[in-house]
Image (cartoon, rainbow, N blue to C red; front, side, top):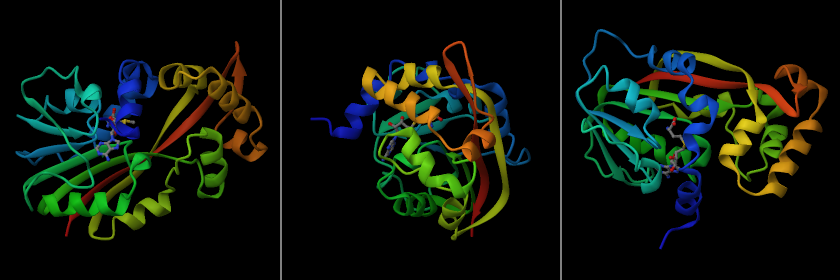
Length: 241
Ligand SMILES: C[S@@+](CC[C@H](N)C(=O)[O-])C[C@H]1O[C@@H](n2cnc3c(N)ncnc32)[C@H](O)[C@@H]1O
């Protein structure tokens, strides 16, 4: 039987690729361009591979990728023979110590029960000097963290950049940057991630009720029955020390 998280991702899997950010080329380029170009990675692992949007791009640069995810349905459309998928929980990675030279993870952290445990599992599975490439949506400023969690209305905490950097204490951070997805449609996000009409309406209402500070930071504006906002991501390249 599926647990709550597995059910949740199974229900989101069909529409997942319809959310604008998932396949956004500039975002993908900004993320993958952090990787060093003078290293050929042999044992590559993606945590929370989802529908394989990142792996489908990265596989152009490496021979094979293994991806794990708690949701079989999310991974069901990945057909590339060079991308191996496995149902597994990031809190307990089914791989040996120092088994990988590159591990990466995009927009998974806010769904994890214990981010500390997952980062320590990633550290364990990385070889010494192995790389960890990471990306995570973050509130525009640490100051509006509470408002951001309320606004998204999913009973989850979106980690701040400070909380994230703190998780990387057993790594050396090689590069850190921010990437802003401009004018993202709230309707597009809700139509592809939420099937409950009442919850959708509540989230739209909450966006309208946000503080002037928030609205200014995210360049909030309403157009043709939609709300457009900027979304910020933290990008990190770190090395196991
Ligand atoms: C927002 S999606 C990101 C998918 C992909 N990384 C991307 O950038 O398109 C989050 C993914 O994390 C997976 N996930 C959530 N909790 C997980 C866990 N504990 N272990 C492994 N995967 C998990 C979900 O099933 C989902 O596919």
